[in-house]
Length: 177
Image 1 (cartoon, rainbow, N blue to C red):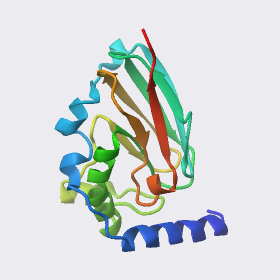
Image 2 (cartoon, rainbow, N blue to C red):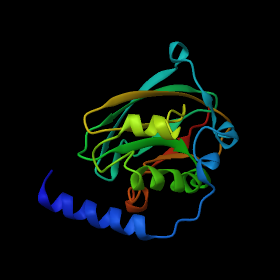
Image 3 (cartoon, rainbow, N blue to C red):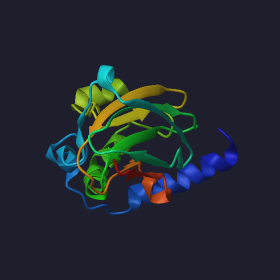
Image 4 (tube, rainbow, N blue to C red):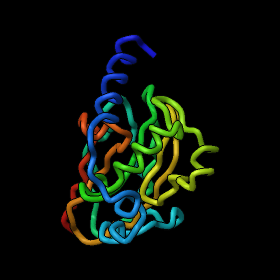
């Protein structure tokens, strides 16, 4: 990792871990009842299309994805950056509710700037395996298949502490039929 990126990362994580975040914990973060309002897990065999998403430092490419109500999309998500990143379909309320869990993952060593400790996550019962989200180390790729519901405010974000706050958010735009 380049020295200036280490410095930026250290500052971002120091700020994130020292801030007092209000949130409802995991119950509002990912795959609970709130996710139902944004759609539901989709069947990859029945996907209408595939959308490739690249995650880099504090950015998604593309940063805006157009969808249709009821459409099933398989997102092929690649972490092309140097840090751990998350692709999480959701709403601002869902992301706010997920802050505490992500902070706990950082504070307890389940996740560092560039690594995910799956053993520690399993021991803590925090597997981060929700259908609307993937958490990836640098160089990893994973798929999220989602069937979108009715038109609603929706987007995608990286909830690693400091990342969403630094602008790592994408938009979902609903197209007309």
